[in-house]
Image (cartoon, rainbow, N blue to C red):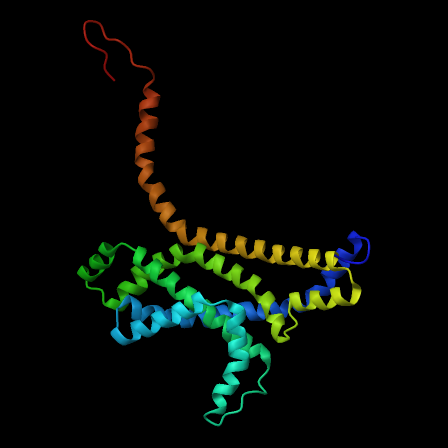
Length: 262
């Protein structure tokens, strides 16, 4: 706990001081996600099409990055890669730590994205693909026009969780000297000894970014499902029309000498 009495005014003051470091955090998040999507797609394809050797290598890659903590991966990339490249006579020790951080987060995200892609593609009805082949579509056309749009819509919630989780994991980048939001907050807290105020401001900033990303993905998901919702609504319109027609007829009346009819 801090050595000073809590004052809410410092929360707003520190919130403003954390904003300049936000660009470093967002740079790590979006750079690693973009690279991770490419890596995840390349890793998912051998497992989807069951290419013998590549499938096994992809499985080892996914198991390693999903089974080890991201902090250990950061240390391995930052301290291990320069030593590894020294063996072949290449010195990469002068490369800024930020690039090692982005690479580590990108490969870490790529492992989860590959599983997301594999699960989303497997969730698409196989009968639709066979129908596309029957209509004369090629494999690429069936994938791009039938599988990809549906798999994208299915994967949006998982992808949103991945991006938000990646945002929170960037707080570990300070362990390599990267002054992102958490690193800046720790420095300000050490200088001012107002740890409660600075970490409360940091929590609010993370929360606001997470809520903004959540709203963005929800909007994107609704746009992807809009055409499907319109198709379902158009199918229900005739039924609603029939029900409204019968309602206009009013209550059933009894005819003399016969049973009641509509």
